[in-house]
Image 1 (cartoon, one colour):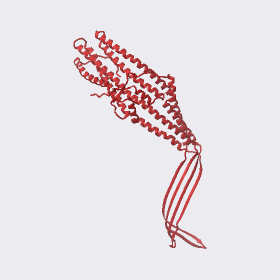
Image 2: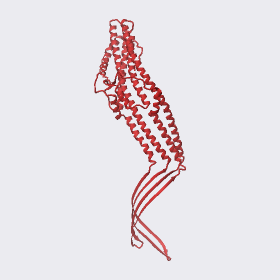
Image 3: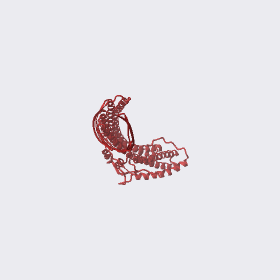
Image 4: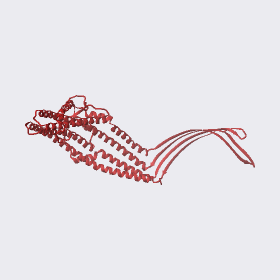
Length: 495
């Protein structure tokens, strides 16, 4: 936004000064062409607010990341539930063993020593199948872990809902930032044109001796300042269009402008009513409360680690063993001794596990979890107070913005009247060029302030609904009804 400043006579030569308006008027002509393009009705080309929103829904990286985080967080309930459900495992093993075997023994029979032994090759095959089932019968840490998982899943759902609401805010902010920049630029161009005409008239009057050179310098300084302001706002408009591409992943050439009869109304309920709605529905507050509940469940789970656990188990195993030995004894006689076995076992057990000492691990985790719960509890308390303050502030901002729009609409009429009176006084010699330029700048500044106030009102209204947890796509679609596709907004391309 351009800042008014006291204009002073230029310090360079008169000849140089009088040559500059021609270049400035070329820039003025380019700006006039752009201003005419802005007002050109081009039906069917300008994108509306809902079209940008639909593109952002499919292409915004932040929303896609939030969706992935939600899907990941949703699994916390399933992960926690797993600790309470049966654990079933199956196993199978097949093995082949080839061996070179040699054995000898000596024993005494009727006072005589007898030697015996074998030497040969062994070949054994074993097949084993098994299945086991374990079911926790008493495990309080697992129960509280399950409760924590459910809370974390709900927290993930609320976080994704908050991300969807924030997308509405980001889309409307980006969209109306373009419209805001466009209206500011249009006003700046009109101001530059008006000052350019005043500069040309002042120069002509100076050339015939009706005005001093200081008036030309004053008009030139004002024109230069307006030109700089226009260039800055041109860049701001292009930057605003770039902001849309961040959301949608594609460039945008034309947007539909806001209708001139857009209604500006104060909130339909009292401040305290909005506060109560916010305390009941604000998503960030609910997320912090869910975080506190999850931390409490985690603390309870870690405390229960000191208690014993009871687990029931059942197992079944089937083992098939076959072996064949071929060799000879000490006398050289051949030996072939095949053997086999088939065993089936069933086992039912109840296992009691009592933690006695874990090196301080359980106690440390319990203390850590309770401090994390204390942190989450304080965060939730802060969010409660902060939500109350945000709701009151947002409500006041809407009231202030609505009143500001109304006051600025009147200020434009006053500035127009003041400019007409100042111009008339300048024509009869009772006012000077500085007064005219000041009145001209005041008028266009009032127009820019009015445009900014309307968009501030829209932003404040949406933010109030966001704080109250009431923002939804319906609000965006209702706002889109006041977007006029015939009012085309396009970026400027500097030649």
